[in-house]
Image 1 (cartoon, rainbow, N blue to C red):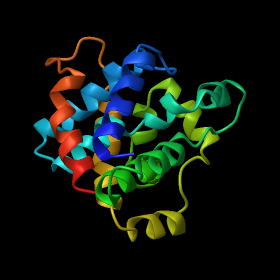
Image 2: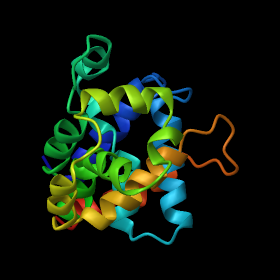
Image 3: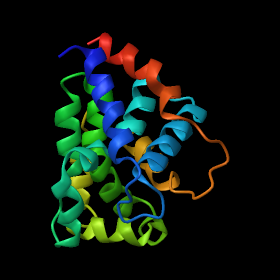
Image 4: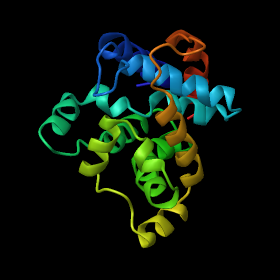
Length: 185
């Protein structure tokens, strides 16, 4: 499948399932758009903006992912999404996605007040994802390629849950970036 076909598949899935909620007050699509807009406003690279848009793609493609948390399991949506997206995007997109849960766990250890500021849904998923990292785990995480990008992505993930965001973006407004990056693979 070509990169363009892959982007069409991604956009279609957002249109089909983006209206769903995943424990937060906002829909999957609203959350994705807010995260990508925050990345754009922060001056992130196109790869990182696309990663912000697609970081929860694993929730959309794996129905079990929604049920896993309800059933007390970690659906590992970050791995599911990154693996699927690797068919069309390079590691500059997929690795921050794969690491955004680890970034949350790292920030819980390294930043005072971070854990307490998480939404109830993020706190629940944190428990299922292994809780805050140990110092050794955080050191290993920080040595990984794309760890810094994953930390930036995690911030946008935390902030991208507003019911009424200041600026609204559309899925189509990110289509050009998606297509450029998918075609360059």
